[in-house]
Amino acid sequence: MKRRTLVAGLGSLTASSVLAVGAGAFTSVSATRRVTVQTSGDNDALLGLKQLGDGTRTVYGRSVEGGSPEQVAFSFPGTGELASGSDLGLGTDSVYEFDRDAGESDDSHPTEGLLRIINQGTQPVMVHSEHNTESALEIELYDVTDADETALRDNHPVLDSGSYVDVGFRIRTHGASPGEFDETLTIVADHPDE
Image 1 (cartoon, rainbow, N blue to C red):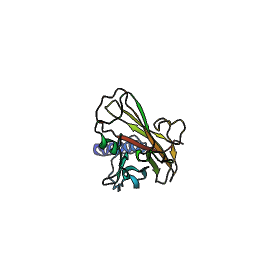
Image 2: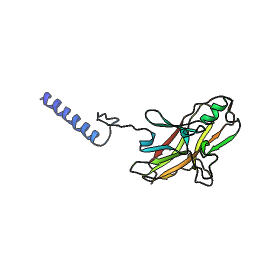
Image 3: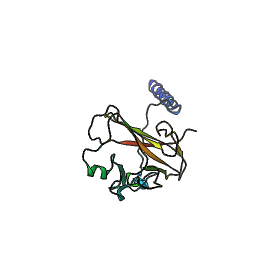
Image 4: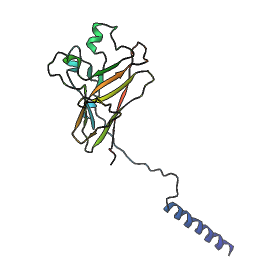
């Protein structure tokens, strides 16, 4: 008789545990699933990056498309400017805006912007840039078609599928010491708030 009472008691505990789990009262769940991820170069990614202007096609180009996978990189001053004088560089305590390639400085109709950010995905995205650094430099992107040249970090354009924004670079050197800097600028695409 006592044994049956014990079994009934365990049955009640099990039933209440099932109710607790069914009510959402658990702290974690783990499940193993297979995920397939394919990466592409900058030009073929869901958020494509493409250099504008002459780039590496001229001796003075600021941008470089190359490597494996294909990547876009920029140099300020441009590669030709660096080759012609190793002491050249951006001045300290200054603000620089680069919105066309150095190789097109003499063109009457130069390409506006240094970089095109293209939404090659199927959903709209909101784009902005982030610059995290331990140096005193500040680097930001801005829409070259915006009359106010507002930084993308402050004004996030929404790109529909297939649309793009052409951007220039703004570099602030206030408080920076002379030297060479290798900086990373992150371009972020988020789902726009509805």
